[in-house]
Image 1 (cartoon, rainbow, N blue to C red):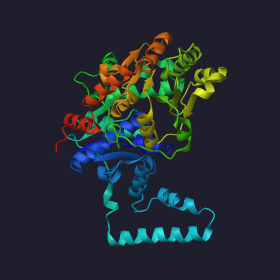
Image 2: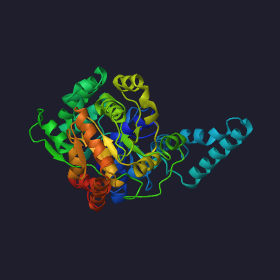
Image 3: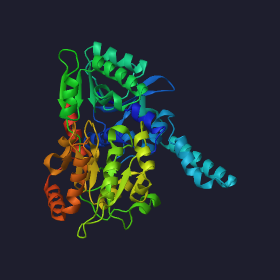
Image 4: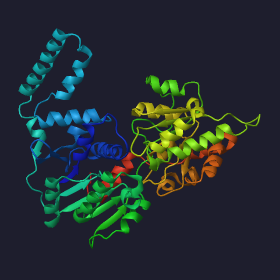
Length: 444
């Protein structure tokens, strides 16, 4: 049996509405594994914080055929945990529109629980069979960790016993940035990551790196003899939307206000020091202040799509110190996938000034919508799309400005780049899932 651990996804879903980064990768891969293999020899495993035991469930019970969001996954987990076909989370969601009508809420709640009870009577034992406690792992079982969170003491003990008994434990490495570039992170995050990294080096029999850059960083560390390290590149696909899809809409008023009837350049990613947003603001400020030739296009609006992270002082200090930027910059901090797809489709091009990445999802997602990305040339970022994109030195504001102006001042250049992107085969999440399954010896 192969167990894909989702403990960290469940924990993340309890405090966040939308996926980002690593969680997005995990969910996409697991959805594709379900589409490819169903429940054959594969389970989702997770540590239940209530029972303090390790549970396993069929992958299709948590990741349906349709694209599952965090709330869907959390709802299905609650249903399995309580052996009850009605999640408390779902009940709360259904009652929200009736907050001011006490009697209506009571009647609806009664109907929901009555329907769930009748479903249990019609399908006796079905809910109880959907998850079981894993008391021990067999040596031929494989544990796969697609996330990057430190394991609890109890889960770590289970994993170490499995390794010592000859079992296989595979850890995906998205990046080693807190280790190789610790100044980008607060002390508590650095300490937490170092514990995760040291644990992973002790329990993993195999590592899957998402880029050659990440593999290079990992190989600089001491690891056990015989440990296998491979690189499996991530996808360009923006799941839920067809390649080059057009006519995408959004009903998010904040997104519409920022972008309607306004040419804009899009920067997707968390607002934090590593993403280098302050340097991009400085570049935009200089571009706006520079004299404009009569035949040159105006500098477009700049849209940041990402929630604030840590060490944002420089970004907001730059923004506040230059009020002339305010009419030309929008910050969208609560974008669902539909909003992001809309932003990708309608932008002039995207820009990605990050100083260090393990991969660079927004670069590939730009290509998925046939958009040029003007990107940093650091770490793994050029691996995502190669020479399809335009690159700059992220610590050189003049180089950033020159490359940002290139598609604006040369419409023919932008059109040729978009045509090249459109003609290039791109990698899907199904491709990633197939490669991972082949590595873990999961076959159809």
